[in-house]
Image (spheres, rainbow, N blue to C red):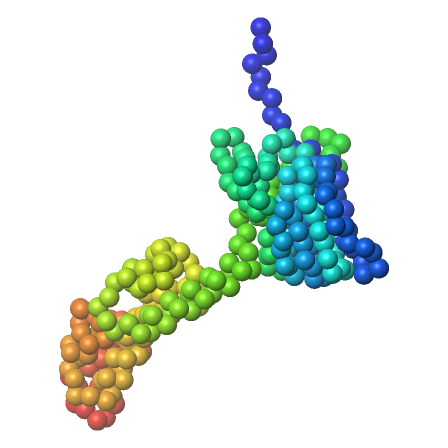
Length: 281
């Protein structure tokens, strides 16, 4: 009768170290047979790096490569970094029909990741620290193996999740355009979703980018612009509070008054009175 106990296969960590190429060394330009799956983070130098595709890169960048034959070409050393070799038992495979792209598999779930990513300095430092922790742990017992495997999965997850520096630059352009559109249409009765759609961003992604870049939500930013415009109108025109509310995009005058008081510490009508040029409305 077969043993019903399931067998858990975890990656074997084969080697870890630091490495690179100095200016007096000839860079490798060859077909390189990678003996195992590898994860590396490169922290110093400038290089043209070829792994099935040509990448013009400036460290920090990271690589996640499945075992097998990869065309590697490295120019313009010196370049320095840290690498980890491991046997993932199918965790990372070449993606059929794709160049320089691997497939990460866990159970029946898969995702694709390029062999190379330009990453932020903060992420490079984090990956380097994880690799160093792996190197400082012993695999002589179950606890050590579990800890090393956990750290390996964390590093692979961070790599797969990471946005590249080019993606960050693109995202920054998008969020700057978003801010400009909000400023342009601040006082119009336009749903925020219509503004997001103009730069092809979903509501959740737009909010996340805006908060990350400017420290406030896009809705709060628009409301602030509306309130600043309302204050100008209350000072420079003879418009009633209700008229100002509608002009700057607030359909509910009561909500406008509460928002104005929260922003400036005084109600709109009291603000008019305190300005001295108009009677309290």
